[in-house]
Length: 180
Image 1: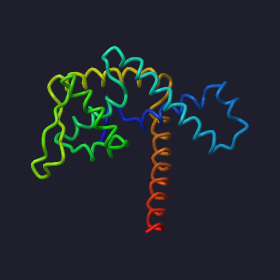
Image 2: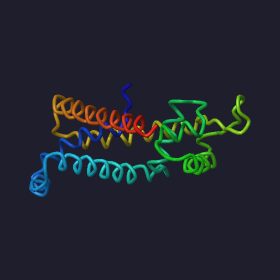
Image 3: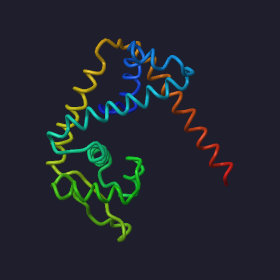
Image 4: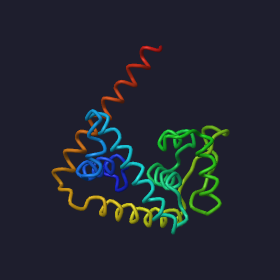
């Protein structure tokens, strides 16, 4: 699934950019390659988040709100518990984010017909308009970040980071099995 504002893709692309920067290369040269890569990925993520927050501020939205709004757009009728999993946060945090988005008229919550204790969320027309605007912000940040990075380089970094993600996901599953 090609998501326009996929953080992992951005990390992949920007890791390539940063790794070629001379200052970064000198600063990380003393660390083992694996540590340098992890640090660069972290730095890219931090810079992308900062850039998006700055650009999105004009729309009055934060990165956690954008991620929540985008997830609700892709999964209409999603429960708050499931939404917390998609956004990688806890249900109480999602509840607060949804409160703020609902007050702005960007999402609406309604009772789950299958479970009267649970609420489901859907995006309003105003929310869809904001998703479109935020997507444009994200794409412009990507365009800026990708300057000078070939498609081949993007594909190589993406493949490597996907492998790392898969390795870490497999390790997490193995640890859960050992604990049970």
